[in-house]
Length: 272
Ligand SMILES: Cc1cc2nc3c(=O)[nH]c(=O)nc-3n(C[C@H](O)[C@H](O)[C@H](O)COP(=O)(O)O)c2cc1C
View (tube, rainbow, N blue to C red):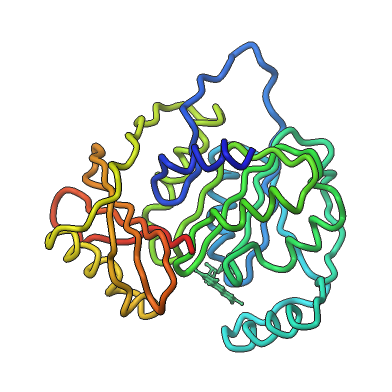
């Protein structure tokens, strides 16, 4: 399963783990879809509501009995305290019966590189066991990959064929990234561009290094990261790059897009 997922991850826009487009079989009964999401500052909520609007799915927010603070520093403190004390936040009961649904879209912000703490509580309740789950997340910079790997490890029998992660500063790219997943799942009409694999990693040219440096210059925490190698692919919109970057002795994959025209290059995800 992990290998299959990794293969699918090779062809991503934003950080969608889109597999090959699938045609919807019109004889199949409509799938029952539930969008379950956790969101503190409403970024992930925007994806959840977009998915709901496009699919007509049922939707519900995962809520903790003690609400999280929306102030960033306070939120970091509470997250740190819960993590250090190994506390799973208590959830309010869900109004929807997860067992009634064929597909669960599961949304969360990335905290510490993976799904936010309340999703851990949901997993512990067992309701996701054996379900078809489509993870979606927002983050400052991290990609969705780590959280999907963690879901595959933590949830017995979970099936994941698609996922999508969007950086909170790239919400203008969100509809296209989410549509790709919805089309691939046969939940909306449309045709996905078939994306080529990235070319083999090689030392970046001066031009590629300049594209990398421009893309990461917008995000303080990436400053000082050096491009070690790069693979690329052409798309109808421009060029996607998969850089291997290095900072403080650690390596990471950094996905960068340079669209045709004047828009500055931007990075879509960092997988550490
Ligand atoms: C406690 C905490 C931990 C975070 N950890 C990460 C992280 O590891 N990687 C990352 O890219 N962003 C991280 N972020 C940023 C959030 O993922 C991002 O702001 C997200 O879009 C917030 O979603 P929401 O508005 O739905 O709550 C973190 C934010 C908080 C508050």
